[in-house]
Image (cartoon, rainbow, N blue to C red):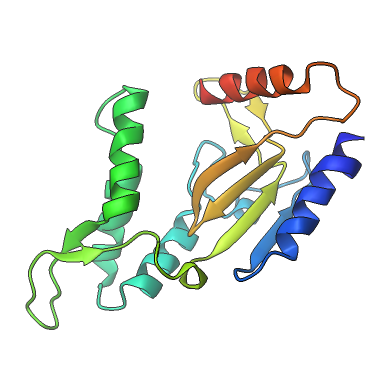
Length: 180
């Protein structure tokens, strides 16, 4: 019921959403590969190739090594503190970072990860049943739907059957387990 009446309906609504176009990836829970998910490992959370492509699309003046530096800044966490790391990422998503424009000589030019003013300039991918391996174990989890903007996971949707007792509580419990 959950898949048919909630997940599928949600994905269909995304497909018809305007003005942006959502790409929908419906994955086989047991047969998917890392490459199908746009990642190099099951523990990776960002679709790095999509992020690199999007950074270049938004900042056409950047060179390859600068794109790599921007990706590294967004995906590297010097602390184990979840709140501090989330604050860092939010700041980067809202304000961007900086790099020198080697063609014009302009220093500390803004580098955007997401175009907040013109949403059509971003890429949108919804992934159904994407596998994530829990670090240090062989266990995996599969969120129902993850919404990526420019390869960055921004929303995790946990669907529940309309017949489920305490659907919200159950979904919150699952999301809390995922955050660990």
